[in-house]
Length: 212
Image (cartoon, rainbow, N blue to C red; front, top):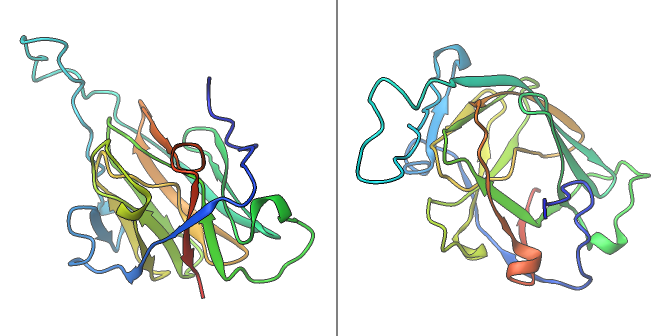
């Protein structure tokens, strides 16, 4: 059954796994991705379609879908952070600033934390996020591997004048505005294969990181 990203239906009083927040540098992002100063010069890696048996995929095929691009909106409405990805037509609840069952959308208080319920990776290619509003933002990431746990994640804090291009198979969940609404240029693989982890249902927890 497909995941309902706009209505996660989370249980009450889930445990929380707090992950560290570190400043994104070339060194701290090693293995996850690279910093980007100019999105026009950034190349998103595309992964060749995997062979089904011992015969390899022809080297001039299997990676020709290329990339798609658009604006990614990361928007706080009260206690709920929404994401909208025009590149792939996606709409999501990215996270909450308080217990999801008590979350309201009728205020503009600055969030102090994010509670993240879901993450995914793209086996077909990497993904570039580049800020358009020159504001600090956050990217929670984990290294490749399907045997993932909530504590494997690190949240990277990025400057508003630098983007990040993550490698294929790196776990992520969109891009997280610090407050209000932030716009990002997004470029990613056109196939848009997605492998997910649902922290709430698999681990009975939410992943938490501070934003102040």
